[in-house]
Length: 212
Image 1 (cartoon, helix red, strand yellow):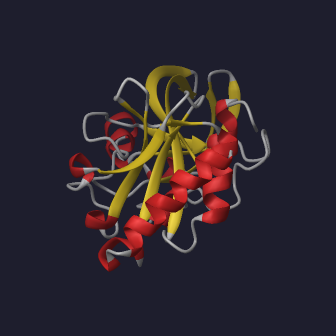
Image 2 (tube, rainbow, N blue to C red):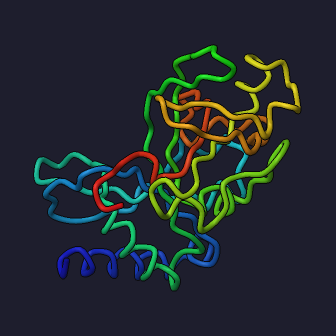
């Protein structure tokens, strides 16, 4: 991990020279198994800027530059934890997500959806407030099985449930695992990727990623 932190410190020093991004900066990570890399680089996520999030111009993605020259945004959970512990001087928050395709069964009616498995600070780091109910909070989803909850996107809530507020609090099943719908994400927010319509958000620990 020594090489990892050498490159991270370099990225931190780079951002420190630009107050616009070092004072209030959110870093997003797509989680997975880390590949062999030669260096890290900070990538300005232009395609994310139209999203309704706090300070979108200060939103950065950390990517890995591999030996082939291509960039990868896959990180292991231990790497994410290291970043969260050491990023306070350069970033306001470090959040993570992993996309999945799951079956959501509500009232005996299953449907295939795009799911984002997110860290507990995902919504708070983006400065988002729920349209209804509550969002996943910091500290939730740190232990596998401890917080079996789901937040629906506003668009999916409107399409499938007609905006029925009584959906919040209902029991459901995500790929056969019992969950509770605790809230609705803000209108217009469909996840971090402009090319993906994310329909539900669940705690990262439910993804079964190695390291949890």
